[in-house]
Length: 213
Length: 213
DNA sequence: CGGTTTTCTTGATCTAGAGCAAGGCGCCGC
DNA sequence: GCGGCGCCTTGCTCTAGATCAAGAAAACCG
Image (cartoon, rainbow over all chains, first blue to last red; front, side, top):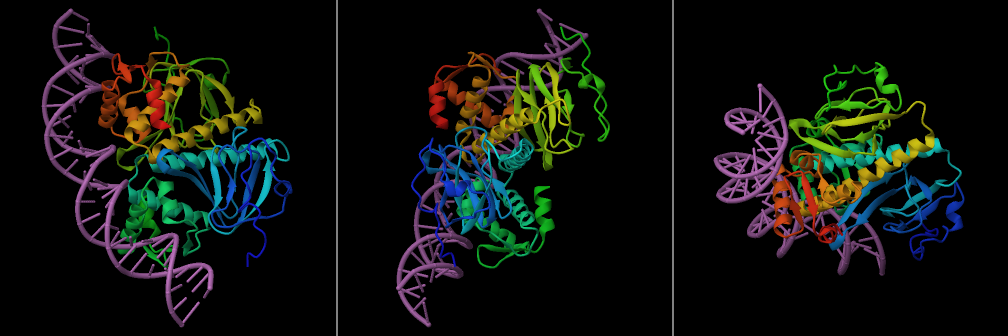
């Protein structure tokens, strides 16, 4: 399993201005990424848009003092990587073993309608994320997060979290301890059951829905 | 001054599904809005995209418990109101006496390229806002906010804040008291000067830039 | 103008969540 | 199957910012 090559997992940093490797430009070919493998980095020349075939991806920015803000997670079937400008504004990494295909290239191959739809989706996702970050308590943030992930996994119970507590914290603007305590609180109240830290069974999703209104 | 009609300031709530009033559909005609006048509300049928000719607009959502999250401010020359769906997801209000023109209608009149550019701009704005909300201190948030507004006003000193402390707080995820204390802190450190609460002279913008990296 | 209202500032507490520390658990490699 | 390392949980303390409570300063309005 995963015996194949993971071309981007240890590829050298792509110098801004160079074109992307050709294996990424071939549509339908799946590129494989190991956990924590870099997909692109801030400052890279933008262009390719990716679709997650399997696995999961985090998109983030680094701040001063080592602080990290995760902007979005992308699960199987989802698309990411559209930029407004020539230059990547974020880092993207696989969180688990993942397979990506290139679905488009901002300059060609893709209709303006497709790009508009993608831009609008990314806009909504950023706006909804912003609403959660702004004025919600830790419990409300985690509730919104769990419901979002559950829905995007097709409401299959139990849900599988491909990200660590650190990722969740950096996504919700919380520390890993607060995330953990919030999980425990929900567990103690019978709202969810934890089968290991990464597998969550939502026993009372309505209680979560109540929390985020 | 402002003796004219303010058609939307006390118009009855627009029932979702009805078409917008025809005076709004005529391009280049300026619609005037009084302070706090509603431009559209969550649940309205979406369609029109506006350009601020003069004045300023806030876009926000209401949460449970009366909490409000301001998603964006729009100053003269800026465009807002593009939605991904049939239905408005936010409220929009004028903050001061404002004049708006209709620059497009999602279904026609506008090229897909224009809409894409607008969607990308709104996406970036939401993402940058999200980065500020996530992991920044009150002082860092206010610094980022002031630099953003200053730049959007063409770096004219002093800058004019068309919004109240409440608006700023609801935009940055802070209380009005914390916003006020942060202003005072900057004033005491000689970073800015306040000529009344709404007029701010940035004496040391570099100090602010240092704060938000 | 002068009075009223609203917005802003400042001070004094209080608290949610951060930070620090110490186990515990599970996962991975051997 | 076993050992070790990284991730997660839990408890304790501390602090940034919320909340509560007055005043001060603008903006508004007749």
